[in-house]
Image (cartoon, rainbow, N blue to C red):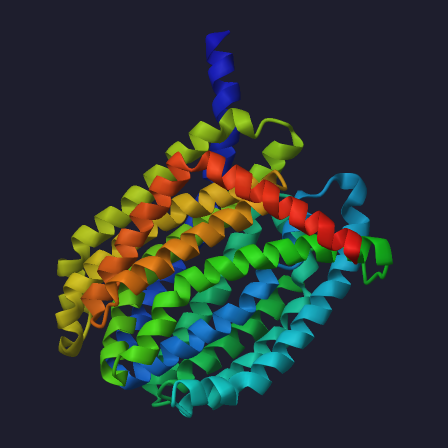
Length: 428
């Protein structure tokens, strides 16, 4: 009897490990290709070009986060009765989002370039704007695939796309495409993503327009967008600030340190969270989410320990893999690896809140983490790569302390936000 109870308790966690294992297997292949890409870029690009490419990708990511804040999370977690209506109307919303993003990014490219006094950003951002046009053709299929927890199929196809993107970036850089290699790589990824996921044998619901469902989806999408925007701004805040106050060469060195450190760690964190959220939604539909909360956090901490291991290996793998011009950044890379540990803890906490539709708590949590990061950046006023890295680690520690001791503060702020949203809704 005891053995059966133990098996029943751990069976959902084993499913999470299974989902994560498939994603991790694909990510290991992708990570090898990513390492190759980072090595080739470090050889082929100057620090100035490296910084330009990193800044363009950060700006692109800030807009692309809208895709993650669209209807995908709602389709993954909704009841079976709502699935058809959510899928049809969600597809319509996704088309609107993608077309808008493509136009907006193309139009603001010159403004961003002028702000950073870097005209090379213009064509980079304009080319990457085209990637949004590929996504809506297959997005609903991908959401349904994740909803069904079919992570084996998703991870294999996603791993192929990411690996080909990394390899193509390396090849374009080797063929002297300079910083434009990252934009061409994004196009390769988008085309392959469309081709591969088009053949998924998932039910097609088509497009729909039900004003009531559209309004409901947009209301929740607005909350999810707020959360994703705050998260992305927190992730890229140091990049945007460093690009403005550092010299182009020094910013390029910092960009390399961030990519070689937290960039590699973050890819593993993203894999874990990609497997975690559909799993938590499944537990929520089965009304067993809270029961397994502690076990999920144990798994999270276990994954986080890998980032500490990576930090210890930095002095060994950086001199072997990268050109001599980057070796001065070894201490910075080491520190940046540690930033991924508090990040995965915060992301897990927010995934629990999202799975329970506690969107206001998720928004408040993201806002507090962003506020902490900006406050520490303002107080320390870093100007050197190591100073930025130390600020990021310090901020991460404060995030975790706040989450552990600030439950009442988060709940109270979330309640005020909910009241404010209800009042605005009634006014509307």
